[in-house]
Length: 185
Image (cartoon, rainbow, N blue to C red; front, side, top):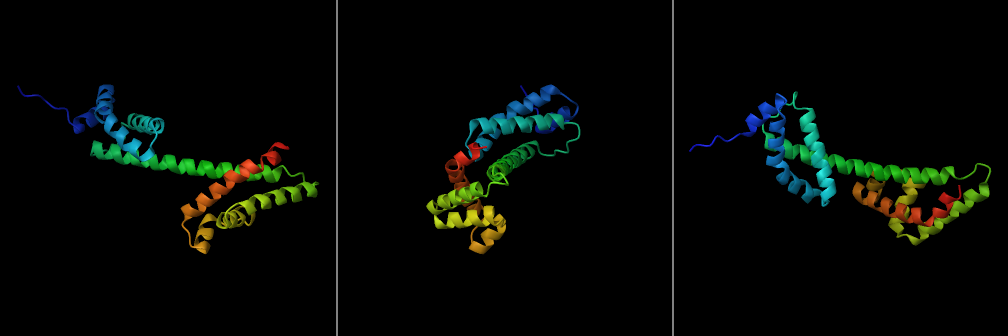
């Protein structure tokens, strides 16, 4: 007996016509393979599931105006792009939190209290003395002298990622060591 196989092309055509069964079929056909693909890149089951939920939601929401020619390629490329976007958001969020921390520290200094400001700067210097020289230098250049990551990397012969690593490392230590200044306000 000859069995009629439903192709990806058939599923895509049905999906464009708002067929929820076609969407379910795509979901069941590709979920496991996509999960393994995303999980290998992220190493977190929860994050992989979140990325795939976003992917499937986007597929459903954009079903009418999609120009997908090869469903399998589209899904894997979209999954890879969502993973990259997730990491970019994560990096930006970390940078934003570090920026907020420095803003909190600097804003916590009452303008009329030069003694407090000097005490805080001395505390920052003491923390910097405990850090490896390169890490402390990168912190000073970026946070105190406002030099960009890219310029620091070029100046020191490092990659942007290496500079970001040193900044992240120093901010972790600063956050811990300067906690009393943050809580003083």
